[in-house]
Each structure stands twice: as C-alpha cells, then as structure tokens.
Amino acid sequence: MNLFDLLKPEAVRVISAASSKKRLLYAIADIANAAYGIDSSKSVDALMERENLGPTGVGNGVALPHARLPELDRVRGVFVLLEKPVEFRAVDHQPVDLFFALFAPENAGVEHLKALASASRTLRDPSVCAKLRANPDASTLYTILTESQRTQAA
Image (cartoon, rainbow, N blue to C red; front, side, top):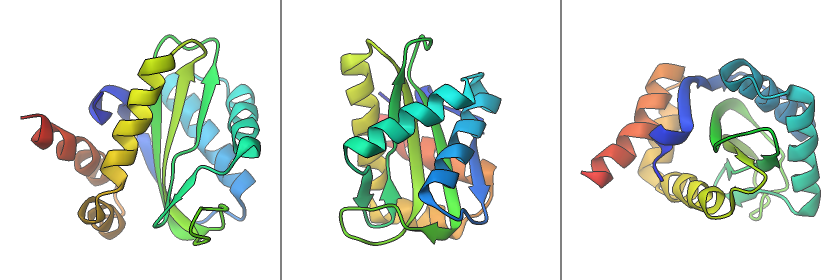
C-alpha cells in the first residue's frame, strides 16, 4: 500500500506547537474531519483509546497514531509536522515532531497493517525525515511523502 493511496493533500499540515499529546490528537482529529469528513469526537476518542493500550511513538521523533472506526470504508491518513516537538511517550523517550495518523475501518485487518507498514517504512528513512523537517510547507510535505514511494514503486 502506498501513501498516495491513503493521503489527500489537504490532510497534510504544519502545526507550530501543541501543548500536549492530547491537544495534538484533537488537532489530528480536526484535520481528519476537514479532509475526509471523519467525526472528530469519535476519532479523537479512538486515538486516545489506542494510545492507552501503548504509545505509538516509534522513536527518532516519529509517531504513528492509529484508530479503527466503524463508519469508514477505507484507510485514511493524516500527516502533521509539528514545528515544536511534543512529549509523546515514544519508545526512545524523545519528543515527537512527525506524525502519520491512520484511520481504518473496523474490519480492515490486512489493509490496516499494510498502511501502518507503509507509513513506518517511509518514516524510518532518515533522509525522508530530514527532508520533511527541512520543508515546513504542506504541499512540499505531501510531495516528499508520496514521491518517495512512487520512486520505490517504479
């Protein structure tokens, strides 16, 4: 699964700061609502419920928050570059500034896992992360995220 299949340009945002992990999850839910019409209240509840199971901060300033929602028909993504990193209980105990959130249908088993793997693979690449951090423009971020996979697929 490719990120350009999951992500709309309007679901990519740069946010100057978030005062807490909870506030950031609310911002992600609002972006998902604006880009895909996903109910903000349900999505933030689902994201927080998933975070309570274990943090989704995977290290190196990256987090992959995700949630399942029954009303969705396919996996959707939201990407946020946070200009001022926030504490996110990441595995390496470092603050996080790159967030790729996924919202999946409740029964999306393999599709959800493929989407998580794709986002993780992309954000494990130090050169991709460096480009993302150096370009605080949403349209440029979208291009970096989607072009890295188009190049690999070719």
